[in-house]
Image (cartoon, rainbow, N blue to C red):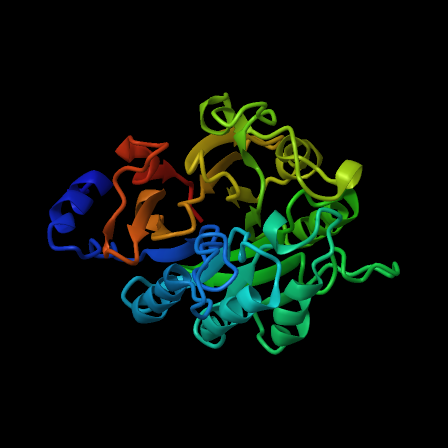
Length: 341
């Protein structure tokens, strides 16, 4: 008899351990915004003189390394806002932790609005995680390039693509920067067409959240939520979540999932849309205040289902409630996903 995600989690919550991975399942890990740094010059501890640290990101990476085998982790993606302040001290800590995934599991990093300037200058990200540091891995498909003078904008791993296979299925994953412009979308569309026989997952920083830019502080958690119609990067060149959907996402039959972050006061949100080819596209937002929450997407081919678990890697327990999303169903849920051959 099939056990629901609710029953499995309930049975294991008291023991503070993950429910067992179903037979034949594999896991894609989603690291939410990780901009919660502590120490000198940080937003959280502006008066501190202590060295800069990020214990939550450290715990995420430790969890991935320790559970790669028992959770059959086949890919890891980061939704962006890797840092809070675009400065060397925080990038050095991000590199210290995220570099530990090299040689362990295929992974991608998405560039959020905190990871670059409002005009898209991402030179510190490029210096820290350049395309050259990934090219030796066979799963790294490459990154968007252009021949303009502004090479710190959009190029050199700011937008990247990866290939991975699991459970007899082949996937392509794209990481698209916050409010990716049209030239980036053209590159992404070409890759999705070229690899149309692979199942596609896209991570971008801004997709779901507060639909229109709030005019009050309360609006960031109380205004209507859905696919966003505003952005933060690239000015008029930048594309909102709604524009990304209309210009790129809806056009590709292989696309099954869009993953995003950015909206901490929304925290968790999901929706399902039908693409132009009749395919269901699940969009999932996860932004757990840059602290303990890590998303585990368990693909279960035998049941055409993906179980989404949000696990607190610091307190070692499932996340059941959050300040702005108190209902459990926002953090622990299952999605239908056709995995028939």
